[in-house]
Amino acid sequence: MARIAGIDLPDNKTILYALPHISGIGHFSARRILDAVGIELNRKVKDLNEEEIASIRKEIDSNYKVEGGLRADISANIKRYIEIGSYRGLRHRAGLPVRGQRTRTNARTRKGPRRTSGTIKKKS
Image: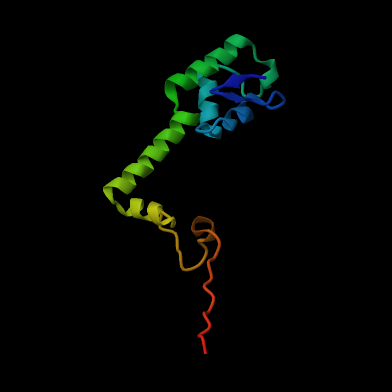
């Protein structure tokens, strides 16, 4: 099992479909990485030798933000938006959709489950 960027890639998949298991690398980026390194797209992960895995690892480390570094950058950007008080920061702080989606209906994933308020009986 090949380990790249702290992720164990599945042996039974081709390298083109195994690389997107690393967060920050999608299908298109995986294709570009494999073209740059010169590895065939349909090779299985278990068929790669150590020097090919090392070349993929080097390409990813030098040209891509992946895993923890990417997550840290994203969370730092969100904190910055909140700190400067931009509209996006206010939406993040309120837990509402950030990119202009409608909220009158269909925002339940971002807003969370409904909170209904019950009626209060008057003492008589």
